[in-house]
Amino acid sequence: MSKLRIVHMSDLHFKNEGSEDQRIVIDALKADISSGIFSDGKSADLLVFSGDLVQAGKSETIFAAPYNNLIYPVLASLGLKDDRFFICPGNHDIDREVVRQQAYVETGLKSTLISRDSINAFVDQFIGTDLSKDQLPEPFARMKPFYKGVWKSKTDSGAIITPFSAIQTLEINGLRVAVCSFNSAWRCTGEADGVDRGNLIIGERVIDHAVQNTKDSAIRIALFHHPFDWLTDADRTAVEARLHSEFSAFFFGHVHSSAPTYTRGPLGGAVYSQAGCLYQTRSYFNGYSVVELDLENQQVSIQAREYSDRIRSFTPAIAAIPGGEVRFDYPFLRGGSGDNLMALLATVRPAIKRLGDEHVRLADESGGVVLDKHFIPPPLTKPRRVSDYDKPEGDEDDKSEEYSISDFGKRVKLRSVGQARGGQDYADPLHGA
Image 1 (tube, helix red, strand yellow):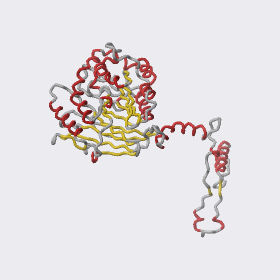
Image 2: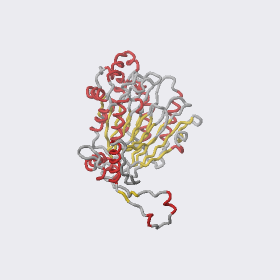
Image 3: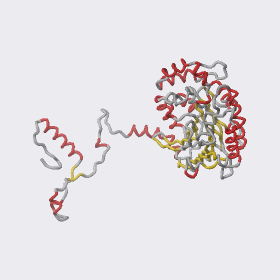
């Protein structure tokens, strides 16, 4: 097993007109990449971009400029071919005018896609849509420029393209790696003031489709634009759990800040790479990240880089991460060879839980708790009275009397009987009558 190094960029918002300041930052980024920022002298294995490549995706031709000015030069500096580049759409990559002209579509989608079942039924209906056609179903008309200007080219490298995702598996350093680019933007209106928050959808069935088509992968990587809290409540509940159970690393953007994290939960662990914004203004935090998954040593390192306008170059992002780099122990990477114990345990954990539930139960056939079959009680003794503490150790009266757990049952039963008989005296096995 070996390392997988990924350069993560997001939120360029490329625009042709009046973009001299943006060109300054892009030139600094290309210089940073070509200067060899990796201490071991090796290059990266993947370049991923988590949405908002352009400022406004109103035509398919508008995506050509950022490819020519940024993506292709960076790939060349990294020594990577086009098939090592992956991208998902963001809210700026849609055609906003289409949404405004078809307000009834947005109203219908908002009132219909309100549960996991309704979302899954919608995905089932449209996941086979042919995106090469000029006329697309109305819910996806806003995505047409992105589909044709960006994702269409991925079909040449063997990607499976649907309106909801672009899925591709490839061999890297002897590993079978799946990169799944999910479309959280197809429900976007692109309007300001966070109006899309809580209305977006990825789709549980979309995750199922990606998992089904990447069954032979050793590690799965998820790429999407919006954080989970931008999804509908129903979709977030279904999608977040499904992703955590099947994917090892999540790459996203939109929030314009760098905050890499690692989480562990009942369904496993995951690395979150929040790359920040590649360009907003020259005085903004403009940055990108380098994520390294070390499958052999079960570790993850994330370097954050930021643009300094004072020196017009990129430096370690010490304002975002102390020292500009963070490392995590990461025991849940999926191991393809089967010799990785933690990866194996992560795979069989659901089966272990199921078998445990079948063979260890704290209930009988009627559903009642059978405590004495599963609980070993500690020794119980009669408490000493205050006056007993004046007696010397070893006094015969100091001997403690032991009780069993069944004595508590007798006590509770007698108390209940006594109460039923109007307060009649009952025996207390610990304290006497």
